[in-house]
Image (cartoon, rainbow, N blue to C red; front, top):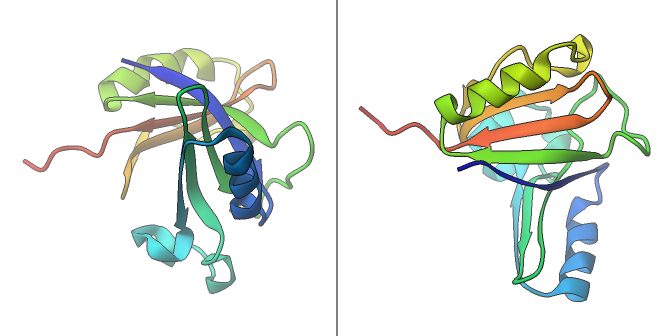
Length: 142
């Protein structure tokens, strides 16, 4: 079943911002640094302390966030929040991704849902300028 939550993008201060939200909203906060993941080899060492995934969940609120990793697009107010779509796997994510990708900004879109070390991933900015991030479960080993 697909779920949608706010996804916040920060430029190096994700841990600080999410800790603040945690003190305001309560719940459980999990922070994962880029340098603690198998993906670190895809980025320069100066980004290893950045947060690749932050997740805050309480009874009332669910937020996900990350520090900006791209060198292609500059963070600025208006492009620092996305809709985060979480689903089971490739098949569940593929249809809505493809529909939202019609007319999408080609420079801000990964061409398809693809496998990453943490599961399936896709990202696009739709024809109305709304950013979307898709994440699915890691495929089961055969």
